[in-house]
Amino acid sequence: MPIEPSEFAHNEAWLLFRLNEAPVLTEADGDFNAMAIMEVATGMIFGMELVQVTLPGLPEFLSRKLLADAEGQAGSRPRKLFVAFEDEAAELIKVAKVMGIEVERVPAKDLSDITQEAREGFAAHVSRGRVQ
Image (cartoon, rainbow, N blue to C red; front, side, top):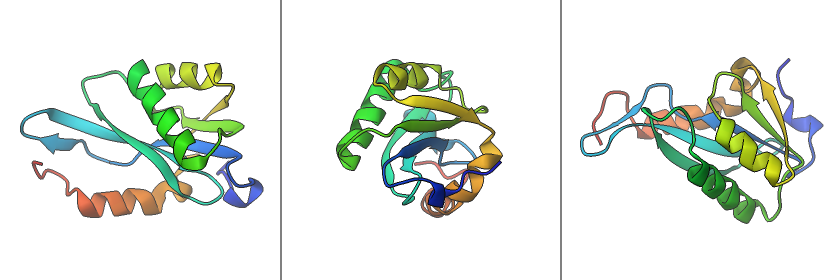
């Protein structure tokens, strides 16, 4: 069931999602996925990290950085973090739980309406197949 932003108060819930549909290609450093944290009620993006596609997910140090950056932007931690089943995020989930954030796994399709505008904006700036 899709997540409805109007059901959440400001900064009550965040979601982790992948901004790109295809890997971001770079000549020098390899290919990356752009993982972002968005505040559910407002749609504001509070942080983003580029993760090499060869990694199984966000490593612990990037998970800590992404969550700390998001907390700094938001001014506080959320009560809940939504993460798509399809995204490998074991380290981020572990870090979030240590921070006292409840994590709920959901199908990616339940996040797609909320994240569509951000994903389209990202795609407009990073064209598929273009080497950075």
